[in-house]
Image (cartoon, rainbow, N blue to C red):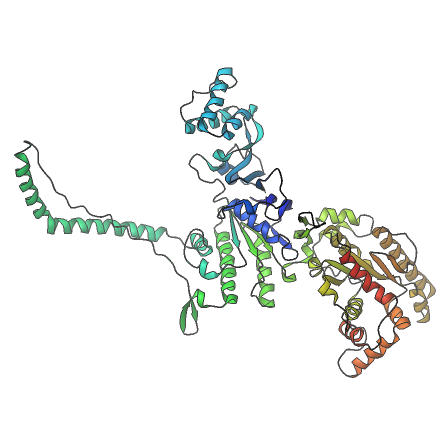
Length: 635
């Protein structure tokens, strides 16, 4: 089984958020937004290592100060259903829901189950005497035929479970308490079915390099090493040692103990006739301990401990351990699942290593037989693949007024939601779902991390705007949280905009109206029918874009159409030629000095826009101002 969704209430900065999970889920957002809080809430749910306190309750919680983490599982297997039992996973069920709740110091686990409502009232009662009173009331009113008299709590639990298994027609879907979920012997039923491993940003490999059930290395050893042969040999050695001990005792102590016992018997018989004393050597049970495994690092001709290595290598060791853990599990997978949750997987990684690690995590999560689910909180575009935009969860934190408590929201763009938004735009559903490396989404990775986005047609458009914003005395757009992304053509603006809109990222769409395209083709000697067809095609694209963006539909829009749409009159190059002629002189100078490339080159365009001695004006600066206004308008 795997996690389908989680709902977290009143946990630290999270008031009430729901997050749908994929095989791989990447959380993005600014520092302090709550990305890691989601991962740590799940760590508390599964592992419970952290003891919660009042300061862990959401600051704005008023009447209901309970912390609740709800986890919905899906894709239950036969083995999962057998382990959970029919109370929680009836035959053919594919889903399972459980909660962990902290309430004023009390900590309990509950789960959605099919059970008898009156029994759930007993299970949720406080003291044993309260449970017994409810039990006796059930017997007296005859509502539950065959219910035995109360003897003790354990017997009552077993009797209720047995009765429910024999009366499935009287069961209802309820929230069942801790007793059932953890079983009669207190063992967590989730253990062994689904394990959660959190790699925190401050985790050092030296802390995880000693064998133990709770360490990453320990979990690797559990799966990677077969101890059956060693254990059998240790058992044989224990028997051999025991036999040799007995022989040594008999040889060196046997006669002495016999003589001493006879002497004591003679003395004792004077006081208690017919009784004697026997002395036996007490041999300690010598059990050879299994070998514990330490981790050392070979470095050239020397061997050192893990904590003597740098942060980068320690992180690489943890990454390698996680990879091995997954790989070993896949070799002999018993159907259990491990969820790897990682804070900032890019830490201490060179760009090439970050790309490799990102690919490793994706490959492992894509392996249906590997028993691995992956989630991480990241600040790096290397760990976000725009082809899988539906795996991105954008976390934002807003404080709408100084007197209000901040609220966290998790945004995501499902394929269905994006397809619905694109309905009627001309973008086919098949192209959206094909997962190919489309040019329109190729440059969206950085945009997912932005506070606002300027979406343009091509990389030269991006170069011009980035260069203008980076001029001396200006604040670069990136500093203000604005990213300029390009789609690879006007006809490709629809899909990236729909994705950004579903992620609630404010976006300014900037494109050419291309009203002079036909005239240019005629000037180049193209036939009239081709020129007319090109004009009609551009007008059609303009109208489709305006309709999709919710603007007034015209053939050739121009200027600042709205706060979120700007259209260049014909082409950006023409606007620059008419309003900023010195830019081209600067560009040519840069090319002549071998600092730039001739023709349409994004880097050269950006450098010329940044270094031109004459400031731009008019619509060129209007677009920059409109881009900055996107950030200031965020509520």
